[in-house]
Length: 521
Image 1 (cartoon, rainbow, N blue to C red):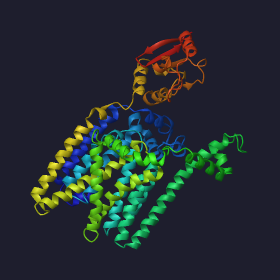
Image 2: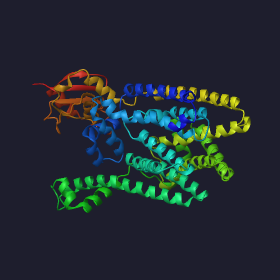
Image 3: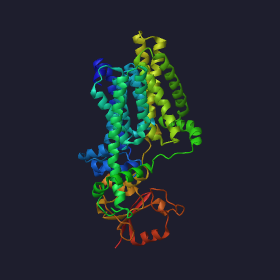
Image 4: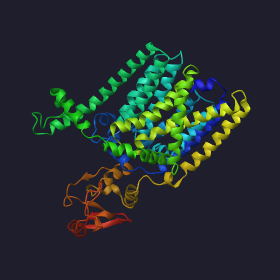
């Protein structure tokens, strides 16, 4: 950002600063106004609230965003659970807008760079992920750090050791946050690798490869800690092993290779994204991408798909036209082309259609490519030397994107609550003094997470109703048609269970979805 400010007065960047300040207010409102949902509360309960060391070595489920949990757990100095859960995402969301602006200013006028930042911010999926206590937004921050570092390394003569260090940090931590970051790590590395090969900068290529190998090694070491901890835990609880019943630390010391192997096999055997039939994957890819783009701008999925294809074709043409011309344009075209094309190719190779939120970062090359193409078209029509007219057109496009962004983030879909049952639970718990809850029989997983997050309460958990003094009954438990519960609801309709509750407990709080019962003596 310092470089951008040095290239012009602060007045030229004040529009970007004002936009980011407004978005900071919007994100703050969203952070507290839209209450956390199940995955966030699960992350808070099991990892963030237990400290950074615990978060760094535990991985019970595939969608645990370890790197995010570790950083968030460092916010333990704050008593506000919203800051501890969502503070890192909030900071990352604002940083992403600034980093997009910084990156785009290397390729186009500030007005268009601001348009790219706005277009990205207005995407519904991006907006909703911006304040969630999950690692996707922070992973995009790492993506942008990698892109800016690669630009400085490949296109400037002043890039020193610091740029390579930031590159390694971005690659390492991006993968440490969530393994699906590989979908942007590979396109980023390919962009830089192909660029330096075209420019025949072989010494630079060697340095990039070494940096990549160092990042890969550090990432491996970070995951190795998790594998050791997981493996030792499994080995200590499996009677078929000689280390059954031994403390996990001793298992690691006595059988590190066994622990490592067991933990790694456990992680690899439980992938978060399941493969589908390859032909189904190929045939369904257009519909999948359309659905993804509908998550960006609702109702415009097919339009964005067409624009994305056009941008990719424009970038391919630009690569051939710019090889012997501007290095900046060559790098930009390579990034757009490779990122837009390689990501779907990777999905086809893996034969997967991941959750849409996994590909939230994909809006970045789309936003950049859209504005980049517009910038080039406008310059061709108007001419680069007609500064006033060109600036006016840029400002007009910025205003258009401001309107698009505002309409998108204020839509019903983006204002809809993230949580449903979680909010209902909080509503019913607010009617009682939760400090009185000493031991409870949980009928769904929502209850203990809500108690921990909103009330910092962790009452003893009774495995049976007979041993509990408290129980919370959801609407699902009283519905005769709901005999097979849908996780995370733990119990379906059971007439005997309800009879026990009604005969031994008294209702002390109730709303449309939940009723809190206390044992009557």
